[in-house]
Length: 357
Image 1 (cartoon, rainbow, N blue to C red):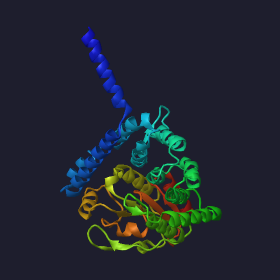
Image 2 (cartoon, rainbow, N blue to C red):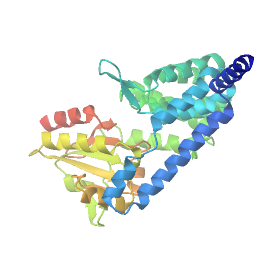
Image 3 (cartoon, helix red, strand yellow):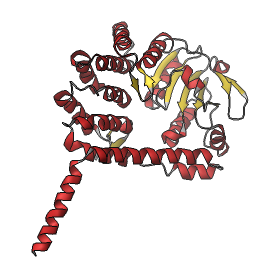
Image 4 (spheres, rainbow, N blue to C red):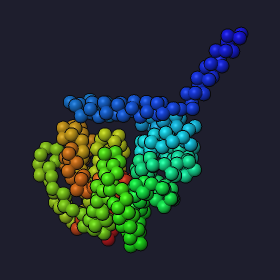
């Protein structure tokens, strides 16, 4: 009996210790998921048939499960300095992951986690010199609720470089909220601060200077109301394509890649729009980052019914400064930009409104 109680006590202590989380556990969760994801991408790239590719695509590593594992590790320790980096990783990883509640409403998978991370940053980590990745992770999460925290970091962090990265993050988040002149002026102010304070800081291998330069380019050439650049490239068969070939049509310009795991949803939404706007001056034009052979397989299998630029090197995506996939531009017949953002209902609504003009 005593041995049983002792064993239970030891097991309980082990469970509690496991639940408490350690930096090593957090690193293990990250490394395991990233290794699995890299292997999955390699398998997709070398798949020889459309059927094989579909089978591998269905075996995509479980992002939601990895996010939940990381949250279980860091949640009890958010006051600890070591959780700042894995918290940033978690926010990036869980971006776009949603669940349905009992009423059928869609909400972020880890909305409570994002709020708890923000609260911990205010309470425990405002003076941390390691906040820069967390600032940019809040951009990836694309949550307007992050703006107050970013503003607080930009104003109160004792680290000038962190202030600059927070300023860049503010400018990037404001991009999706409004194109009003006052907002534009604020974005430019934040970008100037980012360049002055943090130009040499790198986040995920990209310098703040380069990200700020891209944002300035977006303001000048890729904002609503601007004329989108013409794209010149080839399709999956090597045949020449130009975006301007569709002059006079409303174009949904879709930057996408199957590695993101949203191919089925993209196909469904694209098919819905094609059916709704059949017979009207409308076209979906893809810019696909998969290997050329993979795009051919998708098209040969009858899954993709719209023309696509083949862009495995991201040359065309780079011209449009695409940092997050999928991304959509809705253009009118003169390539004037009416919408920039994720694939979803707003794309169809915008296209319908432009067609009625």
